[in-house]
Image 1: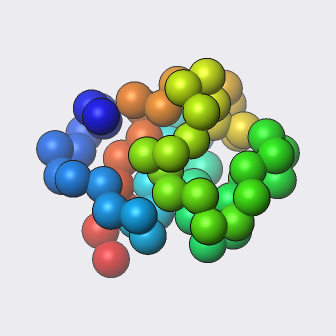
Image 2: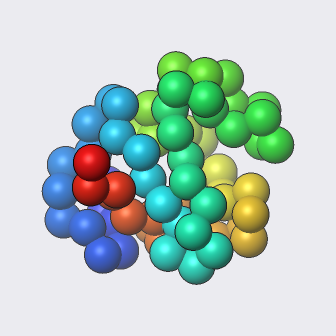
Length: 66
């Protein structure tokens, strides 16, 4: 999976931030706006999933450095 601004492998616990509106996807909390349960890694989100903050596509997300 390719991500804009990040060439790192995305781990199952990694948090990713939208490069457009800065909304953060955290697998520990999921995405209640789009009906994604807690525990779902970013790589397992549906292909048509987009940012609940601004509707940006998945490739606009960047891995957050911890």
